[in-house]
Image 1 (tube, rainbow, N blue to C red):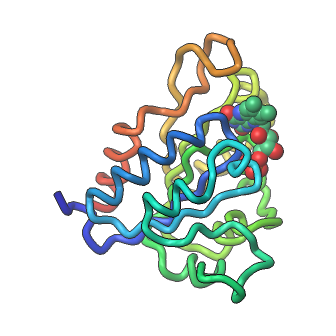
Image 2: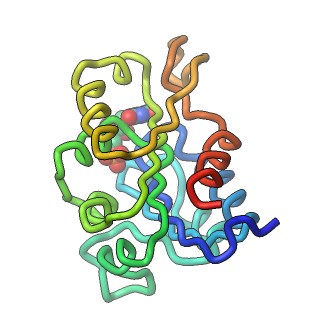
Length: 182
Ligand SMILES: Cc1cc2nc3c(=O)[nH]c(=O)nc-3n(C[C@H](O)[C@H](O)[C@H](O)COP(=O)(O)O)c2cc1C
């Protein structure tokens, strides 16, 4: 299977309990032939280690804006300039808001602002965070920019609530990636 051979995907992973699912997602994209540059936020690193995603993606994970040029990972402009798809899964309420408002305090949000290609957003959060008017307005703003969204699923959430907010199944996310890039 090489439907994504040579396609360069930047996978943003943010501070959601669903961050561990980014490991499976990375693995599936690599198996399809994609080059995957993982970018983790500080919140993401509370839920999954960079080592896991580095090994699965076969390249250093980018996370520290201020370490650019010191390590082996590329800088944020280089990542933005060499990406065919910016995929963010899971997307936290906080980073969703930062994207919507054009804030760029870290590596991932700086890549977002410097990038001009297709964007696929996969939010995951508590159902009340998801239905909050601030999140709804931020999401509409991002849709208005033409970004694709894989809506979260309904079910038992990690926080114990039943509702909408679970990260969509990894297979559904991969199918959307293939539809955009395949
Ligand atoms: C146990 C735990 C689980 C969390 N799960 C989520 C989540 O699924 N989605 C979300 O948007 N925020 C979640 N949060 C809150 C975010 O981690 C928090 O807003 C953080 O600042 C976001 O970091 P980021 O900007 O790196 O994404 C969770 C927090 C904790 C402590």
